Amino acid sequence: MTKTCAGCGETFTAARRDKRFCGPSCRRKAWTSRSSATARPTAVLPGPVHTATRQLLVNAGVDLDADLACSALRLAEAVDDLDTPPSALPGLTRALPAVVRDLT
Image 1 (tube, rainbow, N blue to C red):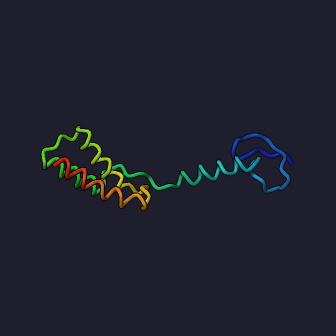
Image 2 (tube, rainbow, N blue to C red; image 1 turned 90 degrees about the vertical axis):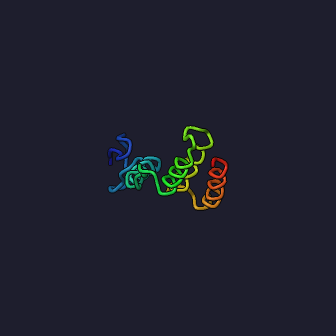
Image 3 (cartoon, rainbow, N blue to C red; image 1 turned 60 degrees about the horizontal axis):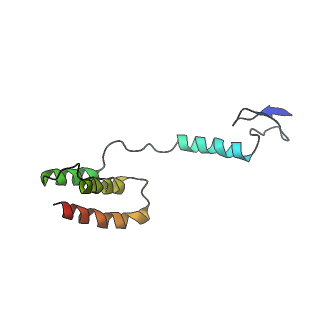
């Protein structure tokens, strides 16, 4: 039975009536595209740690364009990021106050 692959659109010979994909790679690609389409959207607003860190630096009169200030804000973003691995959070939460201390 000749069918059209739901993944790549190529024609293939199906051994079973319910086969939709020409092979495992097309099946995986279709699954990956479906699962990434339902993934949670990334946050566009700064999180609470980033907001508090930025406010602290502004109140201290720190130039936010300075390299160390940018590093502090990147650390704060990483703490707020939901995709940051839990195992990385202790190191980030130790590094952030140290960098802010160096700036103020």
